[in-house]
Amino acid sequence: KAQLQRAIVALRVVAPNSLRAIEALLPILYPGMSMSYGSIQAVAAEGESRASEHNDSIDLSPIVGAALDEMYSQGDPVLAGVDLDSGHLCSLALRDSRGGDDWAEVLSQAKGQGLALAVVVKDAARGIEVGVREVFPDAEQRDDCFHAKYEMTKVHRRLSQRAFGAIQHEIEAERAHDRATRQLHGRFRKTATRLAHARRRCQQAIELHDAYEQAMRLAQDSLDFIDINTGRIQTEDEMRQQLKTAAEQMIVVEDVKARKAGVYLRNRAAGLALHMGLLREQLDEIMD
Image 1 (tube, rainbow, N blue to C red):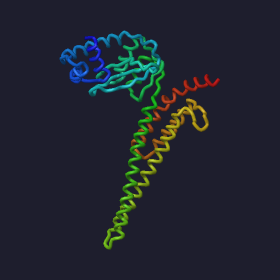
Image 2 (cartoon, helix red, strand yellow):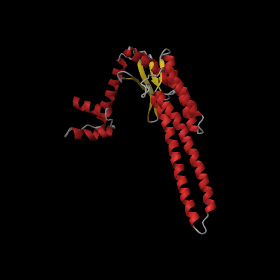
Image 3 (cartoon, helix red, strand yellow):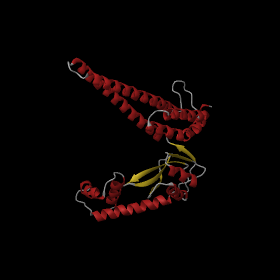
Image 4 (cartoon, rainbow, N blue to C red):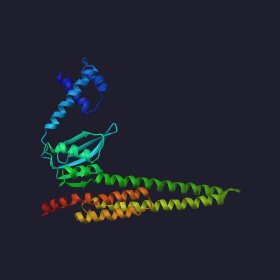
């Protein structure tokens, strides 16, 4: 019986499987054994209850740095926190919304178990920022590099596709114009107009792509803490200023989403560079 219960909980949590799938799997894993849907549901419910009791009893005081983020379960937000050192899931709560009040309540519960955050890594979600500031006002709020790189890369991919599409359109227009000039009654004037228009669009798309890519590469270089060519380690101020410069270059690009990515990067520049100060101190200690 105990082995079946462990199997049900493992299949539910680790895989995870639906209760119907577990009902079908048990006779395969344990030939000759079977359990009803209701019995499996009861075991899973008991496991959830015991897990909840266990989580509520854990001392979270050793955790000083955590990554906070929001996931979704069937459209509803799940607020989660993970210890940066151990990977322990220190908070996990299903909520109706993800505002500052929700985060404050979830973090207050963890604080009641000893959680005392000094460092928080997060994305640009306003609710996380407000909740952390209310419960842990002295915590340093750092922005994660993943979302910054993700937002920049998403725009770059879109501009690349647009540029390649414009190049292909120009090639097709050239072929159509060549065919028209070789035909006795070819409509070469019309195709010439289309070709000129395609060339202008292609040139604009390429210039747009190149301008954004230059800014994006500057931002990506900024996020590298060391210059590979010289071996020089960046300072926090240098990283922040270089990110702001890259952001301003994105903002002047004539594309709505490129400007949006630039504003995101500009607003997050200070938070993205925060970790560099501590990292620089630690590296200086090692080198000394």
